[in-house]
Length: 222
Image: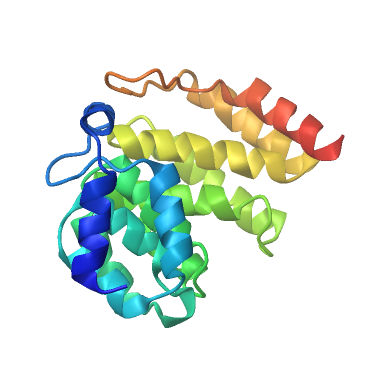
């Protein structure tokens, strides 16, 4: 598909109701309000198209940028491109879509190390969310993953809101990895105590990590 045709398809798929929903999740204009179901159908139609993905991102439109993350080619994604896109992140919905793409690239582990060290809210969220997505099944050792727990423990309460949320999810993901890490993550969670995350005008809730990890491991092992 050409860029203009894709943008027209996105605009046609947008709804006022979806724009209201996305706005409650912190998404700003410009956006069409395209559902993830519609985005998924369009992505399947386009398949992988790196050039189109870069045009869509450059448009600045939220829905176009989410679609860009779905059709971008992980093998053709350079570190420079990821850094350009990272600088444009301005809400957690787009950040999480960006992370999903980044996790498929050969650069994922390098970006975890770089971005978790940053304090900027969306960069930090990208790094910790990327770690959360990689922790359960990556080829990292338990020792490698355990090294992130003191970092989370020391910094989670000082981190910005959506970064704090991602740090908690990273702790949970590390704990799900193995019995030994469940114990270490649980001990860290007890020392950390309650974690406050402002989810805005949404129904989202902050999970209690210890029972969450236990239930997830039970499902995984059962």
